[in-house]
Image 1 (cartoon, one colour):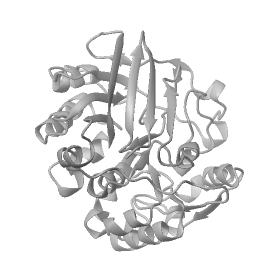
Image 2 (cartoon, helix red, strand yellow):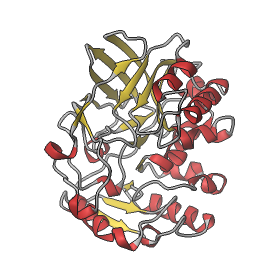
Image 3 (tube, rainbow, N blue to C red):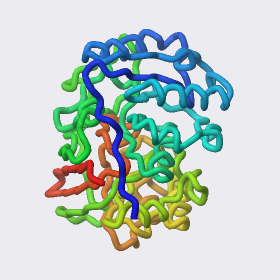
Length: 341
């Protein structure tokens, strides 16, 4: 049984590499990019934005060039933080030297399409990765219930930290950058709470965290890069807590992807399943909640809805590979993550 290893803690003055393994930032959003960089430099960090990260389009460079840039970022950075997700990180998978990335002992942080890379780095090598932040998110305050990714990346192996369910979420459409409220009092305007799909008010579950964006990680099931059953066997004797969030697929698409993951054995070792909030559309005959219920409702483990992860902010950092305790008491949730082998 192999244990989970954790990257070297991020120190004051640490170097943050910003490659674009999926999509770069178009020129019209460079003002927001500069604000994001300023947020990190204001914390005393050394941010290095690589050329691909400022190049717009579907992808900023060839797959081979993006792989090379990612390798360089891991060799030279104390943390690797892409600007955001995109569409085609999957093009990089068979070109990456996963052992070399793991040997660098560098935090890899991201979400959305970057889940395509975070998940295999943890499942293939046993190195913890962090889901729930990217560079372009930096200007926004998080609720006081959540930690920032830099807080978590600064913790030593063996540390534990607790986060609580956010009381409010964002529900309004995205506005022009200059019109976006960044403070926590205005950024999140609609009440939210975690809910158990079976209606119970209290629950307690524990396991190793693994998951990501449903649309991207579901494509890895049945490949060497998404072998969650093997991860559970080799790294999670405690069982797993699988977390998933839908970026935009309609309810039928979500049902299909969840069933596919079930067929691939992703939930065989699960002690619980955490489903993030979503703005994804219902269909005339199926709601998002009913899709989850139809796909997972008869699995004999708790399923939590409206968890604080995904494309409807805020979301909390989740460490792939960390041992986590999740509790729900009358709609008030908490998660404690233990950075233990």
